[in-house]
Length: 461
Ligand code: ARG
Image 1 (spheres, rainbow, N blue to C red):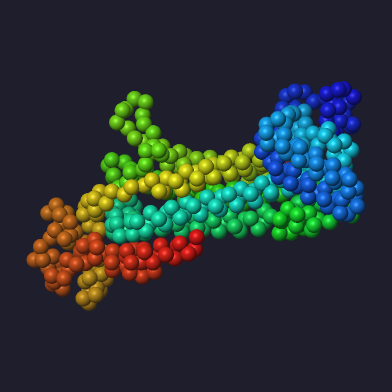
Image 2: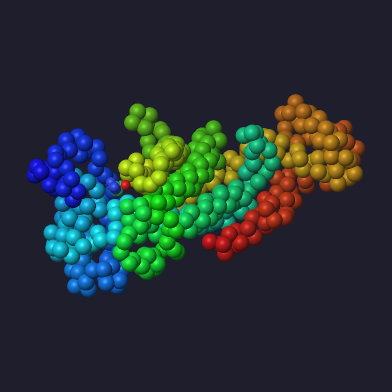
């Protein structure tokens, strides 16, 4: 046995060391060390169970607990020496523990495999990540509600096909995103139920010969239960895929909002300003203020979709049970976690830094015949069938366009050419305020409804 191979915990069976390239290729410590807290938490729960079941002595448990406290302190303070020779976070920590406390450290791995250990660590890590994301989502949604309340009566054009469609309020528009991000939160909460199940006890794949108590470990770690089948427990990463799918959907919503923010901030539209701290200038054009944050978020959406594809493809066709392929689950997963948490943190802050420019929205509203549907509805209420009303208003719009005015710019006589049912009261429905106020039902854009929706949104948060 060479000295190099001897460094490996599994060196006994081998007669030559791996090359440096293979060592680097197969190691994961560079990226899985971020799970050190979860690894230690999982190991302590396992050790307590081993002691409770009389599989290790109480003195061993005491040594393990003492040693792990030192390991944790070393990692926390940056003194810990991570070694590529020790492959991953699990072996690095176990080796250091053993150096600190001797035989007790060597007993820690009794009845356990890195296969159930790593699956446990990822689940603990993801559960923590979901809790962080839920908190950030809540802060972000609270900021959206604040903005919605402030602009509950601010009219802006609502678009379909990016053409002016009907007036809505800016507050109503913000609450649309509140709903989308609310569903994203529900998806994470649902995913968490399946994440919070304990693989430990599955050992390498078939379970273990020791009289273990899995339920006890699950309770120690705050899991909702144990994975029922050992083969499934060590091999499937569907929970990670599901988590990343929830991240991808969330980023899809972020990208929609980002796209609108970028568009609204364009001088051609000019509906909003975003606080300077979320924008950057140009190295050549002194006048530029670019909405970099929403643009990058739009771009990062693609990145998270990519992570989802990576994980789906990683898992595809893997035979039972654990395969080393699964080591590749971490980087996409961590990247999705980082991207989503950073994005949410920034967006929660940025939502509070949005200033609305009501004059620009008002100007846009007078250009797109936004109250045409209101005129049609007016005629219907006077007895005209909707299709006939639709046609009459179509002619009115054409005439207004020809005259270069919006619908309220047509005189009563001009309007009456399109329907004798039109009377002076028509001008109340042709105004933006009238149009908004008349959509007065749950889910509608009337300022009164938006304020009520804001109240409901607050109580849902
Ligand atoms: N670093 C490995 C991973 O991330 C840990 C499990 C390794 N198990 C094994 N039998 N090689 O999946």
